[in-house]
Image (tube, rainbow, N blue to C red; front, top):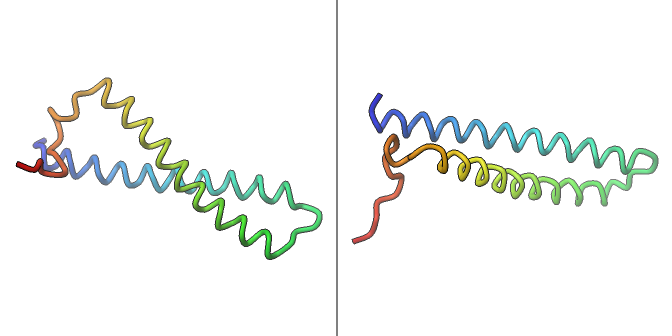
Amino acid sequence: MNKKLNTLLFVLGATVFNLLVMFILMLVFIVALSALFRDNPNPGLVSVLMMVLFVGSIVGTFLIYRGVLNLISRRVDLEKYLLPLFKKKK
């Protein structure tokens, strides 16, 4: 496989990984939220907390992705297999 195909597969795999992790974090947060407000849910408070949990899942996904990418880059020389996504300025 060439570097272009490796880069494309890496970006597609990273996207699927990000979406999967975000979905899992949202499920975990929703289960925790429903456990907290099982008895008397206030609709206004729950809707605000859902927005906060959505943003929290995005931040959590970013942190998890960054940690996994750092772990992979320590073990594998990504420059050897992937094209640079952004060209360096002169």
